Length: 290
Length: 245
Image (cartoon, rainbow over all chains, first blue to last red; front, side, top):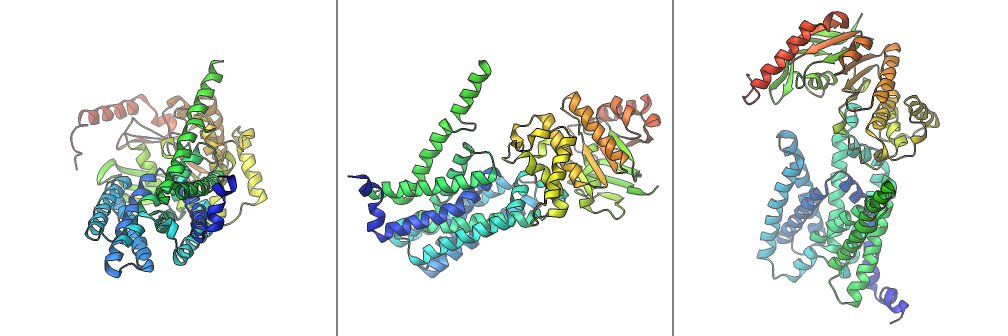
């Protein structure tokens, strides 16, 4: 097999591969920067909790409206927002911390989602949507994914400064009279939107992977927010491209293949990255001893 | 002289458990006051009350027309994520928040002012360094530079010189005295009584209640400090029990 056949031919030859690649590109542009903020806020697990909420929302919508693209997207979006709001409210009204209330709602919505899926478990369509069908991304989902990416980039450009300050020094923002609660809401909405976009391509369980892994990888290579965001979009897209090729040539499920490629990059960066990796720490120690 | 903060029988605390009781008095405009007292005596709680983050459980606390954004507040370091990937310059520029807010762009003049503030605290060549690379002392200098840009008439400092080297502490004390000279009102929680005696005209001694408040000379006497310490040991004995009310 020559290089052309290995790296390009699948995309030249098949429309579904091209669509999948475009979906990956759009997802990477949105999820990359959002994931960076999520990781910097130490809210990775909150993202995980929200993805389970999206699962139960989409499953509920499937029960009510059948395999409707619009209903399932809307269901996932609403369920994600409700869990985000409820967790925030519980954290504000009771002494319980936000991570604990998110974890509680995560388990509740996961159980609800699994319950609904198990009663309709034999339904192949439902399984596809819940666990990802990037190779069957249709026009409607592609439109949704691209719109979410566009909206995300616009919102980040407009609210970037506020989102970063809210993340880095929320006490200062509050003391300066900044709209901390609104920014927090904007941010959680962006997370949920990107999870909904991601679940059409990768499935609700994998969508969070394309958000968290590239962001975690970029922390090992850069130390400035804009750089982190660009790098994590790039890594997400590269993982998408390589993952799609793997799944095509080896006949593997595409969603997990993409996430596993990103996971491989994470492990390599953890060992060899330029900032805080095992290699960097080793070099630092040697320099100190010399 | 007009008062910036006036307190009338103010009680502050968390979850209805008072941390400091029945304070009455006022901080005059342009005053420089040290707040001293044993650990857990309610000093930080008092600052949070003054800035409005905690509403009084009882009594009246008047800010006499001050907005929250007119008050610069330096919390204890633990509240900021020092590993965050942001450059020293970007961090200082946040001091302009009142004018730039969420959306307005940073002007050339504002950037120049940020450079001057960094110079004033001795961080000249650090503007492009990541915040994470600063030592504890350098980070404190950075926070002071940001407060300079905030340009607030009222400044509240919570243990500004704790856990930093003596040179940084001396440099930053000069900054505080400079602010005092410009007529700003400053309230600082401090531990070093010698420093208070040398540089702070007014002192407030608290130990979950008011022990003494007034000119440092008169307030910082052995009798008051002994009383504060005794109050502290009384609570230690009761530490395991629920609060009284």
